[in-house]
Length: 214
Image (tube, rainbow, N blue to C red; front, side, top):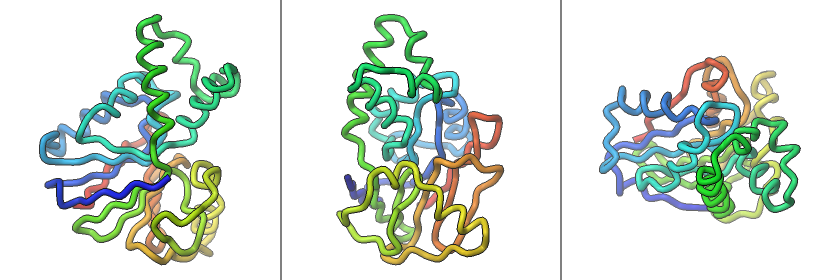
């Protein structure tokens, strides 16, 4: 459920919001930042797939040494659909791209989605900006601890904490310096106490947010 990353291995580290198949936009953003795949690291808050133009190439990022991600609810929907043999819910939520692939491409996507079942729910990154926790939607506790049991569904889906922040009622999460989340498309990045919400709706025409933390 947890993965720990030592940032000292890398020169620069960025955290990216939800990709949702926007592979070329990501490459453009990395090029603008002079990203070096041999020295730098990109960590995504999940939802590599669905809705956008190129989910397959986003899945293939999993093979890159410079790329890490937590699982998002869209990866989980895909995993659940393949396990159940029922594509209905996933297709309704942006997964129809899978059915439009060639046989060879479907095989590649299938293998990559099987790998998604090994993705962590939570990444703990130690780097120049401190201890950074990356999860898709929420860390469902007011105190973070390494390998602390938390509800997996809440990590992937929960929006209540963000709603509290937007209403001016949210508080900090203790146990780490920064928490990075995606999941909810926003017009602009929201920073509230030590929590940062960086899904700015790239797939809907918004910005693709990348934040440099080292």
